[in-house]
Image (cartoon, rainbow, N blue to C red; front, side, top):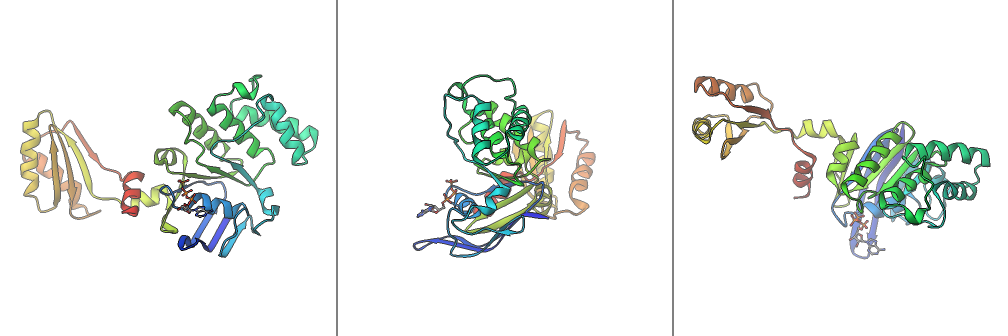
Length: 307
Ligand SMILES: Nc1ncnc2c1ncn2[C@@H]1O[C@H](COP(=O)(O)OP(=O)(O)OP(=O)(O)O)[C@@H](O)[C@H]1O
């Protein structure tokens, strides 16, 4: 089942077509990375999903229910975490969750149970401090607890780690990954390493459309290039190998940097590829200290798409 479906979505600001026939589906229990350059239209898309911005045309459904601009009905399925959440600093975490629960009409007992569970989930279970004394990372983790209070089917996070240091970022990513069993996470970001750490699905927004869309492993498999990295004991050995490799008919490019060599082969996915390198090594009686098939990174894929 898809928690979110977007079909033929269009949005223009004056002459600028920001979203141009966007098609996007988010399956249940995915951790879905929605990435794009600055100004690609991620926030614009999120605002339309939340019913806060009127699309020019197209449809959006959340859990099978149509999103209508200016109505909040479909948002009962959604939890939202902005990049920098705002709080009443004089409250502690539990008091704040109690206030949010009351506003959304949750019964008192349920608020207490949920607050306990969620504060444990986000690692704030034993914190008695007022929110004014929280670090940015703690505020963000409280934001996740608040967004999950009403048990939403979809948690939308808009660049939740952009203001955090590496430790705070890791904590948030761990919490989002832990939330995967309870909800579907839509993570809008341009921090590609965050996506590689926790997302199973990835979509790249470019030119108002999805330029790439699939599971991370599918995308990497589809863009696999027959590339290898080798490391030799000495620069002389590396140079000898590079010289022989350059005359090999499978080699497209051979780059040497000291003892390290990167080889890109002509024929992608053929048996001849890596084996031709091993054959050459044996023939030259060279034993590398490292021999590794190169995986495309999300950064490689992203750069390929936006160029
Ligand atoms: N209300 C508006 N009026 C005019 N232009 C707008 C409006 N809102 C957004 N835009 C433009 O639409 C484009 C997409 O903006 P958006 O904020 O959706 O991008 P984004 O992918 O979220 O970028 P970032 O990663 O920088 O937050 C930008 O060029 C922006 O200037």
